[in-house]
Structures are given as C-alpha cells and as structure tokens.
Image (tube, rainbow, N blue to C red; front, side):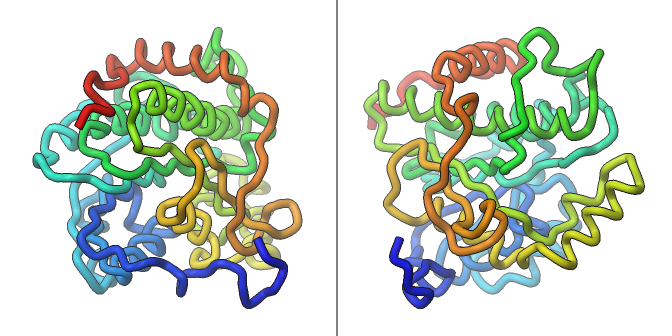
Length: 302
C-alpha cells in the first residue's frame, strides 16, 4: 500500500454492493454491527445471524438499508444446521464469520465442546461448510493477533486438564487461520472461484474483552480500551477490506500500524504454526469428526 495517509483504504472506498447478499455472524454489536452498517450503506443485503433475535432486531433498526435478522447460536450445532436448512435457494455472495467469545471462564457448548473452540471454530466450521453450496464470492473468518500464542492441542482440544481463558482463546484463533488455509486449498482443488480469507481487527474497543473470569484482567482490558484501542469503526476496516477487495485466497488482513494494533487495513503475516499445511489438514479432519459436517460435494461445479 502507498505511504500517503490520504491513499490508505477506508470505508469511503467501499465499492457499490447492490444486488449482493452478505451474512454476518454476531452482527448485533461491535465490529459486526459496524461492518453491517457499512455494507448495507453500500447497497448490500445484510443478514444478521445472531443468537439473540431481539437484540439483533434492535441493532438492525439502527442500520439504513436492506437488512434481515435470523437466529444462529454457534455454540449449538443444532442451531447451525437449522440456520443452514432455512437458507433459501438464493446466492450468498459473502459469508463473514465474525462472532466469537473471548477469554471466558471454562465452559461447554450445547454439544459438549470447550466454549471458545466450539463457538469460534467448530460453529463457524460447520456453518461455512453447510452454506458453501450457496456462496458465490468469498468466506471471511475473523482471527486475532492472539493466534501468535496459540497451539492446537490435538490430544485435548477441550483443554480439560490445562484450561486457561487465554490458552483457549489463542487456540481458537489459530484454528480460524488454519481453517481458512485448508478451506482455500479445498476450494482451489475443487475448481471453485470462491475465496477463503481471514482478518483481524487489531485492538478495538468492543465488549468482547469484558468476560474474563479475573477482575484484574477485565480492569486491564478496560484501561487498554480507553488508552490504546481504536474505535470499532476502525476495527471493522480489515473485515470490510477482506470482504470487498480483490485479494488472493488465504490472505490475512489486519491493521498496518505498530504491532498490528491499529491503522489502515493491509495484508499481514502470520506465525509458522498458522501456515502449517499438515496441521490445517489434521484440524479439518478432526473438525469433521466432531461436527459431523464436511466439505460439500459439488462445490466448484456450477
């Protein structure tokens, strides 16, 4: 990207999106809502895929444009399947896997998986594969700089014997990047033109950081939000960039500032662990076994 501040990409440079349909998980608040507002403003039809329909409707009422609210609980594979079954035979241009939980106390999803791995990764894994026959353009999955501290504990992905909120979150965010890598490999092998991309928002002031079980950590995150974080409007830019710009498959977008904490969207790097092709395949196989959902037959054949 050019060095000139004026040339850096921002929301004003979104293309016209009239006639395109976008699904955003967790669109009722934070970056999801900000992205929904921008995409609808550019003419896209935006589906809010949210756990709490009432909150989703209240959020959608703040957005000018073509918006719709549907229930989706990523921590319940039954809800994920229900959402996918209800999708009409109509194109879905962009799926944005935005929703997530961050550094929550140890818990389990409706299907018995560790909450962060089950929600952030497995829920989106199942949703993406179930909707993939309808996707015409791309899948954007939100990761985090926290992936740099992550490791996939294949022998214990639920971290039953070594759970910490930070370890579980980092594992789930690394899983998001490995999922994107393997999804792109499968799309390419099938001859599909659909692209899988990932993005992260840097340090953005949202309510995501407020659920740690330790008060000291919640205090630190609150202070950091006030002193260092960028707005949710700025934090949504990598998502919007990944969702609308002509980028190679498996690209990873984040802020261009120091430590990738804030700034304009650009292509960013990832750890060696997040680029491990064999680990990505292994995680995919495990995810299929855990969810009962796999890469759909016929993708790439139009």
